[in-house]
Image 1 (tube, rainbow, N blue to C red):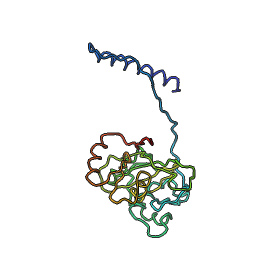
Image 2: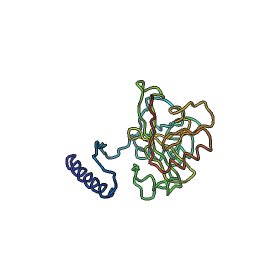
Image 3: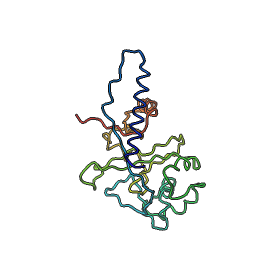
Image 4: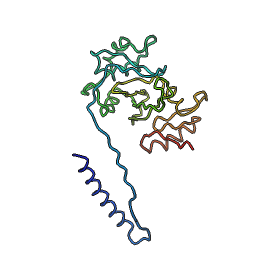
Length: 231
């Protein structure tokens, strides 16, 4: 389908909904006068093609960016999971630290490289919770950590305790070893103890009580990073 056909279908749908709302109003004094604006967001889709290694512009002690070779290009996701389960004491970015543990992971009939839509299935097979984030550059100097933020991409619905946080950057998987340590500086003063960043919306809770209260409300909505006005 081209854009014109999609737009025509959308207009038809809007008109149907417009008539439906008018019927719902019935004999009340309320009137639907007009729809003043329609915003259409669209993006191109592409076949996932993993890369063996992508160098990050900045450095962070909370990230493991495994330097895998072409032989293990399709195993980038699996290597990150192995790195989570078996953290390396020395040279954490070396692939040789994690190859011996790839056999522990159960992919079932999931083909590699894994598609993001198959992550929930992988979670069930391996009793894990996997959250995926995307990087966004917000500052001019790409070599500085504070020039980058992460946004929620896929937030798991699993309740498993074994929790993994990954970044999908330019079709390359990167492990976040400490989500709170990595995310907190972009939303709050990282030196204040006891704070907790919500993975779903990046709200910062000051203590356990406020964290639990926030989660009960946040889980009712779709994951999205909240941007507050500067003024």
